[in-house]
Image 1 (cartoon, chains in turn cyan, yellow):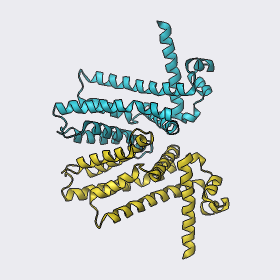
Image 2 (cartoon, rainbow over the protein chains, first blue to last red; image 1 turned 90 degrees about the vertical axis):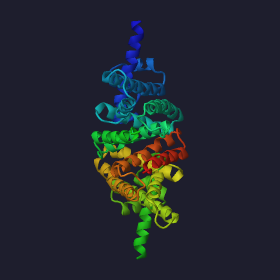
Image 3 (tube, chains in turn blue, brown; image 1 turned 90 degrees about the horizontal axis):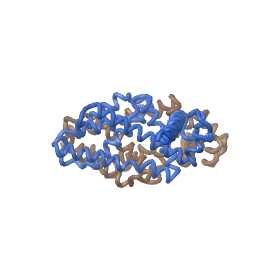
Image 4 (cartoon, helix red, strand yellow; image 1 turned 180 degrees about the vertical axis):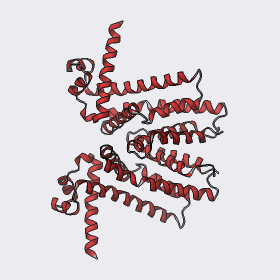
Length: 199
Length: 199
C-alpha cells in the first residue's frame, strides 16, 4: 500500500516543520501559513491532513515522542543483546537532557507545549498522558535490578522512577541558561545512578 | 530616615504589582502602563523608580527572592533555636514547590523569567547568579549533617545539593499540569531526604 506510506510521510514532514518552527520561535509562531511554508507544501495540503490546529499540534508532539523512542531503542540495540536495567534507564534519561542541537530543539518544543498546556486542559491531558507509562517502565527496570541484587530491595521503585525523571527533566533549564554543560548534567545523572545501583 | 523607607516601600509596591501581572499573564503583559495601573500609581512614579524596563524586571525578581528568603528564615525561627540541616534543607525545598497560591504565583513568575532569559544573556546571568550560592548553602548543610553522622561521608555534598534542587525544581511542572498534588510532591521530597539522611 504505497499510498498509505506517502500519507504518513507527508504528515511526518508537516510535523517536523511544525517542531522546527516551535523550537525556533515558540508555539505562538505556529500558524497554518507558517507551517506550510516551513514544510514546503501548500496550505491546502496541511488542511487536508489536519482538520484543526490542535490536531496538528498533538500529532507533532506524539511524532516527536515516537521518534525519540525509536532513537532510544536503536541506541540500546546497538549496545548489545539484552541491555541491563541501568543501561536502559541511562539511555532514556540522557535523551531527555538537551545535549546537542537535536535534543535541545526537542527540549524547547517541550517547554513551548508546556506553556500552552498551562492554559489548555485538553493539551495538559495529552502532554501528561504518556508520563505515567514512562514512570512505570522506569519502575520495572528498577524492579528487575532489585531481583538481580543491583538495587537495594528497600528502594521504592516508583518513587525512584519519579526522582530519576525529575533529575533529568530539571537539567534542561541549567544547560540552556549556560549554568551547566551537558557533560556536567550527565555526570550528575551518573553520580545519582551510582548511588541507586549500590545494593 | 522615614523618606528612604517610603522609597523602598514604593519600589516594593511596584515590584509586587509586576509580579502579580507576570504570574497572571506572563512577562509579555509587563508594560510601564500595566504595571502602573496594577500598582495604583502613576506612570511617572514607576519611571521615577526604574529607568528601564529591564531594571524593573530585575528588581522584581530580586524582590521575590528576598521575600521568599525572609519567609524561610521566619519559618525556621519559629521551629526552634538551632534547626537541624535536614529541617533547613526541607524548608528551602518546600518553598520552591508550588503548594499554594503564593508559591504557585512565584513559580509562574520563575517560568516567565526563564523564557525571557532564554533570549536575553543579561537576564540569564541575573537569573542564574544566585543559584551557585544556594547550592553552596545546601552543600554546607549536607557537610554539617556528615560531621554529625546523619549523612554518609561517601555522599558528595555538592552533587547532592544539585540533586535536591533538581528534584524540587521539577515538581512544579507536574503539579501545575495536575499530574501530582503538592502533597505528593512533598512526599517524594521526603522519601528522597530519608535516603540521603541514612548514614
